[in-house]
Image 1 (cartoon, rainbow, N blue to C red):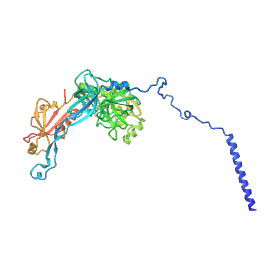
Image 2: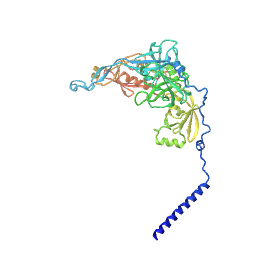
Image 3: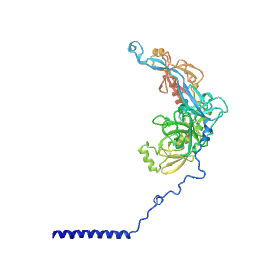
Image 4: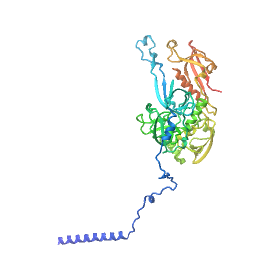
Length: 500
C-alpha cells in the first residue's frame, strides 16, 4: 500500500512539472521578440563632433626632412665656463684657538675648480643674436658658441631673465643662418614637432614627436613664468636652449625642461613657447631687462587638486569648472585699480580662454606694463568683462631700466681677517672706493663697512648683489645700509635706487 502511494505521488509530480513546462513554452511563443540594438543606437553621438579629414588617395607619411634641414644650421652648441675662484670657507676651530685666537670665526681661502656646462641655442638674427636658456649661461665667465659648420665664436650676454629662464647672447659677425619664428599659439595637440639640439654633447641632433599638451605648469621656476609646450620628442641634457620646430621648419618653442625620475629622457620634455620668447628677448635687447606686466592677484587654478576645500566649494557654488580663482588682490596692483575682487574667477583675457594659472601667466607674459587687456570673469554666477591697465612690480606703467651695481658708484671687498679681529666682527663688506653715483649721493664714504643691507647679513659681494637686485624690483627701490667705520663709529644710510 505504501509502495503504491509513492508511485502515484511521483507520477503526479511529473505531470505537474510537465504542465508547467508546457505553460512556459506557450508564454514564450506568444511574447514578442526583443530587438537587438546596434552600438550607435545605444550610444547617441554628438552631431557637432568633428572628424579628422582623411584622403586615402593623397595620404602620405609625415616628411620631416625639410623641417630638419631648415632648422639644424640655426641651432648652435654652447659651452659655458665658470673660471677658478677663491672663496673663504669656515674651518673647524683648533682647540687652542679658544684660548689664544679667534677659533670660532676661523676662515681659510679655498680654490674652486673651473666648472663647464653645455647646452644649445638658436640664432634668431643674421647678425648673431642667439636665444638660449638662462640656466645654460647663468654664472658663466666665458661663453663659447659652435655652429653646425664647426665655426667657433666667443659669446657675450646681452641680457638674461631667470623668471622665464630665457637669455639673449651675441656673437660677432654677419650673414649667420637663422630660423623663422612661428606662431606657438596656433600649435595643436597631436601636431608633429622636432626637437633640435646637442644632447649629451652630441652636436646637431634631431628627434621627432608630437605636441602632447599645452600650457603646462611644473613648478620648477620659483616665482617664474610657466606655460610650457609638452612634447614626447626626445629631450635630454644638453638640449636646453635648443629649438622646438613645427613641420614647416618654424621655431615654435625653446626646449627648457626634462621631466624624468632618472635624469634622462623617459617620455616628456617641455619647451617655452615663442609667444613668450619673442617678447622677452625683444625686451632684453631694447631695455636690458624684461618689462614684466603683473595682474596683481594671488590665487589658483580651479582644476588644481591643491586648491583648498573652501576654495573648491566657492568655485562649485559659482558653477565653473575652469579658470583662476582670485584669493587675494594686491593693493596698488593692476587688478585693484580695475575693480577685480576676491572670489572672482578669471576665465579669459582678450578673447582667449583661461583654464588655469599657466594660461593666465602665458597671456600676461605677452604684454608690457601700460598695455590694456580685457579680462573676462565670473562674479556671483554672472559673466563680466573688465578692462585692466597692466602695471609692473613697482605698481607703475613706467619702463624699468637695467639696474646694474655700477649705478652705486662704489667698489667693495670682504673685510680682512685682521680688521675683523680688531673690530670684533664676524662678517662685513668694506667700501674701498666711492665715485659719482647713488652711494655718493647718500653720503657714504670710502672705508665704510656694510654689516647689513635691507636686513640681510653681508658676507660676500654676491650677498650685496642679490639684495640689490631684489631692491631694484621692489616698489620702494631703496637700500638701507647698517654698518660702521674702522674708527668704530656706527652709521646708517638709505640709498635711493630709482632712475629717472
